[in-house]
Image (cartoon, rainbow, N blue to C red; front, top):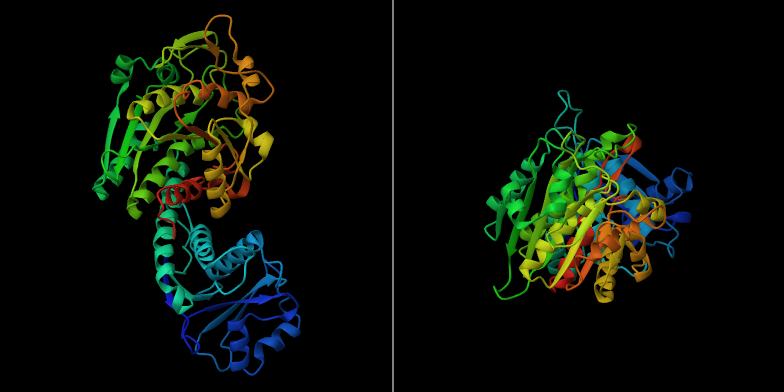
Length: 497
């Protein structure tokens, strides 16, 4: 899918499909009203006839409209003129791209940027059009021997005012890079675990490095991790015959002495729960337990494509968590890279074990701040559902920046408490801490566990267990939180359009 930007022409554009908005109660935006005038009230007659009420989620495809040079005219409902908010605009765009995907049009021109969205400018609307357009047309069918025909839409042109053209083109470049990063994250997470192994994730990281001179990749193997003393990470891997990898990706877009931002992504390519075996129902979805790693790779690819002026180091602890005669057992005690000891009371609480050693290793890069991304706890889904990611941090300004980025990108997060009182739930009779904190506040105690390994750094943890993939008929990865993270980095280095 290719997007382009053009200034609004004075005449009706010639195109396979022109997309226009219609407000509720028959009210028409400026471009739609102009088309209606050109067609001598043809659109008004259609609307008055009851074929389109103008509500979000409604659309009407018209063919060969008299007096127009376009083959098709797609009318999309925008709701009441004074109530077009973020959610309604998103619903409008999803409806439009679904209709386009099901049409025979290979190209389309969109005049949806003129619709007034509460508190949003043209750049935001462009971001949403590109993001939701790519999402609507995304398909993962590479493993099907008889893949269904892909949607016919190949190109979409967004019309803007001439005075906004320069900024719009910059926005389009950034939005496209973000959409590409989302697609990469989705592709990786949707692959089955017999293909997307730790070694495969390393190969994907190397692909990014080959395409971007500013990116370098190296990996620590099992032997190197043993020498360093990464006992927590290795305890998760020891039940698998597939060797673990600690993948280190560096992007250098700023001066050498500028501190990097560290991004850590959980990469459990399949999580059976280990000896603390998960129930069999929906266990296939545990291939998605590397969505944190996928999001980190997608974000790194987007940052490099945009050539942002910052330094970024991404670290991905990649492993499987499987039951085996050599697997970790409940009650085992391991020593982390930090020197702290952990009693493993549940081998299915493995994400925090691979993350804690990686967070300690990330500190060696002397980062300005660390953000980790993980499908960490089912408890986060219970607390927040599938709409926002859970956010925890030891630095309020970082929380504010991440929440702002999430609200802008519509890839939202919600802060949960990280009070000292929760640390008591991690007490162990036999080690410095346990790896679980009991039944209550599971997402919080998991974050509290990680906080013990980031005491000297500004740090944030994103629990994406509820947002990284969908189940049911729409089963598949979402690519979140790539939009949140890329927007955060655009704002962080002052490059946002």
